[in-house]
Amino acid sequence: MLGMKTRTIRLSFVLVLVIPAVFILCYVSLFASNETHNYKESFQHLNNRPLILNNSGPGTFSSSPQGRGTYDLAGIPFPISIPNNTVLIGKEVRGDQSKRFLTIGISSVWREENYLAVTIDSLLKETSLEERRDIFVFILLADADPRVRMLRASDLNQRYRKEVESGLLRVLQPPIELYVNLDSIARRTYNDSVDRVKWRVKQVLDFAFLFWYTWIVNPSSYYLVLEDDVLSATHFVSSIKDFVQVHENHKWMSLELSGFIIIGQLLRCQDLNSLATFLLLFHREHPVDFLFKYWVSLMAPERPPDGLPSRRIPGLFQHIGIHSTLANKTQPIKDNTFGLDSRRISHTNPEARVVTTMKQYQSFGPEQAYSSPGMFWGISKPGDTFDVIFMKPLNVSRVLVLTGATLGSKIRDRLDYGILEVSPRFLQMQSPRRASCEGFTTIQMFKKGSVDVRHLRFLFPEGIQCVRINIGTKQKSWIIVREISVFTDAAN
Image (cartoon, rainbow, N blue to C red; front, side, top):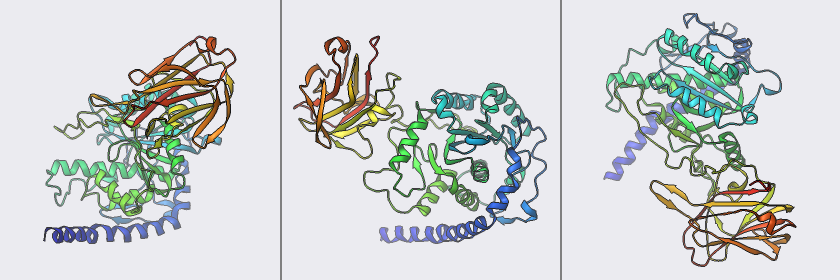
């Protein structure tokens, strides 16, 4: 009986939410396909200008493109207008850098802790100059008071003038017409108070506008959803590229780059109009994170292939905010996988082939421990090997290997019984996952999950071409190899 009631409730949910959503999305997709060219073309002038600090406020709005009208979508004029004063500070990037890999979108409302500055500083700190040329950062100042928006925009302009002038950072404000019905909340859902319903409805509208604006200007191939109170992992841009590459043959709507429902979600920019429309359709009924999950399940109902999880572990973003923009609401949530693949040493390894006989878990391949931010995770058995093969013998001076990961107060999946070996010459591949090398020499036993061997150049003056981790007979647990650093500089 209970199962029958559950199925009835699920069927009701499908009839009430899913079926209307499908019809609306189909209609909007048809509308968008016919109007996209004219609509986008009519707004090309918005960012085709130098540094701007627009203090006119969102009191005037551009007319609908090409004289075309709008229609009502759940009480919201649609298509969403993009006023001439949408861009508070920023400029369009032209030439080879006009279309980039990634746009990072952040919707922000003022908080006393000024989490936004911490978030932007972290984004900039954890990206190289080369990686910055692959990204845009769009910040939507969603404060209701236009004076607060102007003060915050002025502060961001002073703090990040270089990033603004280069086109990396763009600060936006939403149109006031998006919120005209905010005070006329007809009903409460989830047993939330009226104030909480208004807060979450506005949050949905904020996200919807930022998605819509990004779809209109089409600045990049991918879009990353962040909030204004997060820290970023080192070289997160390169890590995202690697994760996208892993999923290149998998049809996906969203890849999860953290352990939160919406923070760290990666989307294709081409899908943002569909998502924005879906949010508008149900903006009064559900919170933004619930709507996001519903949208993903509608658009990509099939499960990811085995061994290709849509969530990246470790997470690339950590939530740091405690106090919400809603009064008296705290949210001390954390992603306990963040930082698991953090490196002790920032270092670029020499080119090498990396293979292992251990059974790889999901997408945690052996090369991730060596050549990119990431880690290897696998199931070991006695006699397994983990090989690093250089293109030619190198004058190696130091090898550092770190294994295991700290989850909470415990260290897990550490290599306690292993040996580091080296060989001067690579002979051939004994199998696709194991190298055959000339005369391996034992260098050091693993102690507490790590080895750090120096002065190898003097022990092997003719060079080293193979480095091997040999799994001992007593090793029983899974193994995480989170860092392998190889140095050819005698100073190390």
